[in-house]
Image (cartoon, rainbow, N blue to C red; front, top):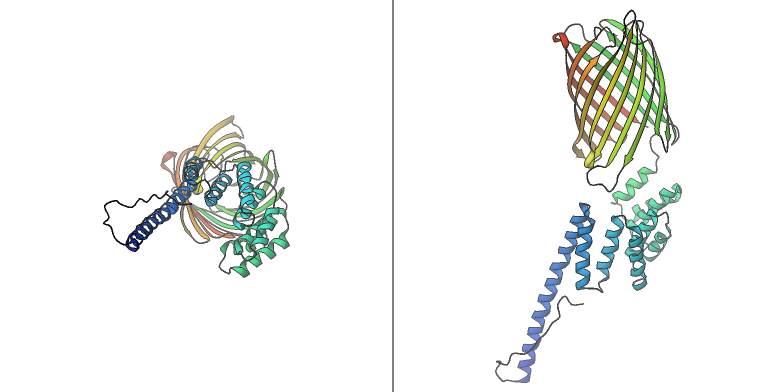
Length: 432
């Protein structure tokens, strides 16, 4: 279909001449008009496609569909435009309308593998995958179609068939990052995470406190996970150690429920024993432009010292934003009961902002800053009974790969009586 309807009327001012001359003039003028019309078509096509892609990248589906509808009004028989409408409908989550559009297209062009692949994508999101087989049959030499079928098979749990499809995609296109990443995903998600860490508190009023620790977290099943850990601590020249263990159950309605405890060789500077439980639940909003998710956590922790009993009530809210930004608010209420004194409740709170910094391929660097304020009364030797404080800090996390990361944190705490605590911590994690 031409972009413009062409009308040509020979000028009456042309001098009379041979019929051949008039015919050549007519053909030349018609050729120029056709070339100009085709040029306008070629200029307009990438223009509307670029606009549709731009609005789609921003999640502005209404604006993207408005441009497509405008172009369809100009060229109602253009199948490429209708394919774009089906594509945007699927991206925006309007799966029923996208399915109807693809089916209508396939009635007109039943051998178009792109339309079959688009319909297959809709079906896979609805729990159906038969259209992918048809798409591959129509064009068996397309690596992207084999990779799409592999993803669908992987989602159904047919890992061996999915591996064969990813390998087929790589044999057709050795540069396909999608197929290579798909093969890597079939190696299995890591079930264990081992972390090693070191912490140091430089105190202005006494010798530094140090600690070294290790932990092993294991996800045994989609429901059950455990964590084991231990550490050695030096408080004002006194050595202490403890062992901690917990079990977590991931429940569909309740979220994650964790319970655990710890025992220690306390030497009066750390708790003799501990017990705790936590509830954690999250919500996600995939199509939201601003808020991508919300996580709420609540926990209670009991500490038994030689001369005191402490109960803390902890609440945290974390808001997740696009591009790996996050913001959290946390509050703690501590109940202290010392030998020979009454019971006291002491509040504290903190806020934290997390943000990405830079990405190099699989490696990613992210950072965070936080501020905390409140009072503490844990009667540990490094806290000298009770104090109020303000803490400023931040951290960096370098994810070397999906299986390794290095984390650094530092803070500066101002306490009552003119005392300060400068903290630094470094940990390394590996997943296997």
